[in-house]
Amino acid sequence: MKLYDSTLAPNPRRVRIFMAEKGVDYENIQIDIIKGDNLNESFLSINPRGLLPTLVLDDGTVIDETVAICRYIEEMHPEPALLGTDAISKATIEARQRHMEFDGLLAAADAFRNSFPGFSSRGLAGNAGSVEAIPALAERGKNAMVRFYASLDAALSNSAFVAGEAFSIADITALCTIDFAAGAARVPIPDQCSNVKRWHADVSSRPSAEA
Image 1 (cartoon, rainbow, N blue to C red):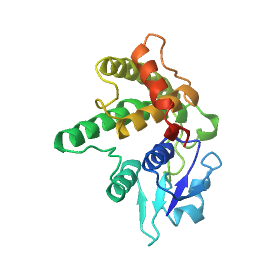
Image 2: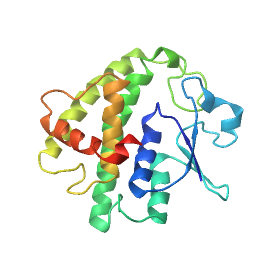
Image 3: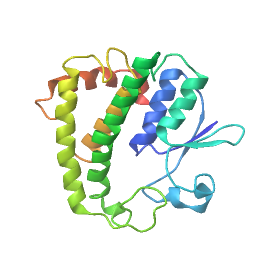
Image 4: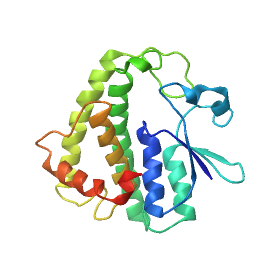
């Protein structure tokens, strides 16, 4: 299978880490989103939405959306379980994973996409046409990230990982969110968020974090 990927973006990295945790092999095809290669006809013929990551199976089936790809991989390679093992853990991990996306990753994306000069007319991701960036959204995204860090710090005061006592897709999303926010969006972990810093050091030391 082929993974259409960009090392510059957090969502493809989420899939790479997920696959690394599972020990899954695949062909990696890099798409330069800064240059707009995801909007070229050659890629749009594969995924008309122009979004990464995109997984193409050996039979030609195309799967986009990060969590959908991860669910497929989990079904094909159940161990180690990263999406839960029973009704409660599956629901808890799903909820926490969505919190990491909606409260953190979307905020970091707003902060970056609306301040990066190369995306000045690409304010929305993918094949959305010309959309002007809105500087005020960048500032709102940075403020939302500060709230995200505080909320995550409180949650991690009571657990080793984002969704409890086991590493899961929620930790993968949080890690990619924070690394993207600290780098591209320039919103690092605040010094007072000691629980987030402890957790971040732990998950960053996993071999899969290098994927």
